[in-house]
Length: 154
Image (tube, rainbow, N blue to C red; front, side, top):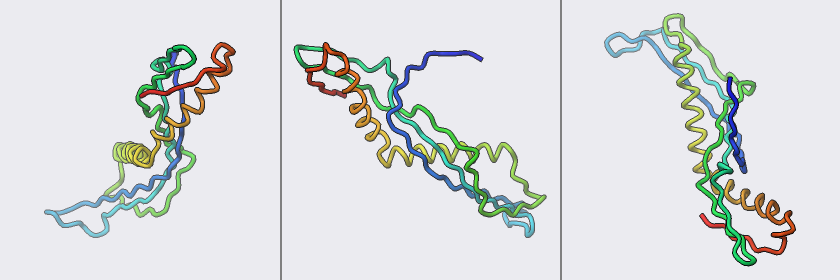
């Protein structure tokens, strides 16, 4: 175990439900063998957080204007909530069991799919807007910057 300073500013999170269908069967020269089919349909909730490396946020005061440079938004975490597991269908054949390795690959694919869909749905844009809403009061709470205008640059 080791500790490290992370200095992250999480500004947006999304929870999405991902459904996975795992099917496999034994085949004989390309034909599926009857009674060897395994099919499992299940879902998990995936929570994705986006934000910034706080150390990469740069700012500079010129006259009564504070110029804030935000780095690119990034995914800070992508986690499956194991407690959210729901099983919709399970038909398992002893001849084609789903292995732990296959299950692990399916979970990784669920996380990747959830992250891609969240970004496509506007996760990064929301994270940037929330960062601006969070940082403005951060500066204005200091009496030296209270009357300043804040301008964000990307």
